[in-house]
Image 1 (cartoon, rainbow, N blue to C red):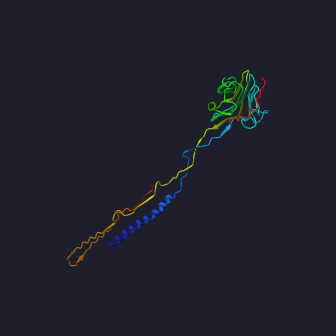
Image 2: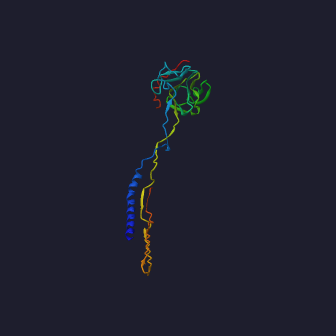
Image 3: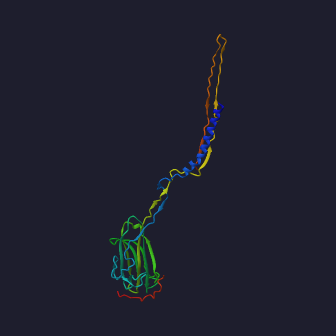
Amino acid sequence: MRFGKQRFTTVWVVFSWFLIALLPAVSGAIAAAPPGRPSHSGSPVARAASCIDLLLNGDFEQGPSRPDPWVLGGFTEVSDQRPHSGHFGVWMGDYQNADDTLYQQVTLPADAGTAELRYWWSMHSVDDIETPYDYLYVTLQAADGTPLAVLETLDNTAVRDVWTQASFDLSDYRGLSLRIHFRCTGNEQFNTGFFLDDVTLEVCESATPTPTDIWTPSATPTGTLTRTPTATPTGTPTATATLTSTPTATPTPSPTVTPTSTPGPTPTPTGTPTATHTPAGPLTPRCYLPFVLRAG
């Protein structure tokens, strides 16, 4: 029986060390587990918005013979006099009792993110520098010519012979058909001329956030994988042998010995081995270009 007890204990010790030796392989398999499928639950990333210019021939480089789609009224000219860039611009006024107009009609997309009108203007005048007499009105009109808004009003007291850029936010007019309208008026005495060039109406779509692909591991241990072997039997296997001998000798003519031997070895191991791991310019004085007086 002593041999049986020693053998049982040896088996448990071998089994415990086998579990301890197995832990590194199990830990490596968990760490090398393949990542899960891509997820679209990542932080949104704003997509760059694309922009277009709704106005055509805004630099007037098609020349005097093809001003379209601009509509010219009065004595408005596409001219090579004082362009801001390129070879041509628009010349308005500069004659007595001037009344010139210029417009182009566009439709702002209803889903536009932004809409901005920009243009360059310059003015030359021989009129009073303190009292306004001659004007340039920049307005928005409905498709039928109904006035909607006055964006800017310039006159002969403004800065002279210098190109200046103006810009206006037209986002409130999304979904509408508009006329971008310029009008120049003058009195009967000294002349004032206004020059326009590089007119744009830039419309940009809204920037749309799009989710990025985030690889979300489906089985990744958090923190540092720590191996905590506790594969030591928590109990002591015991073998219990019970030997009961009851000899009964009865003196009879024929002696009879009746031995009753009941061996009852019942080895009951109670050890529970466990192995666990815990994952863890001003317009340069362009020589003023010869001032032109135009008869009304």
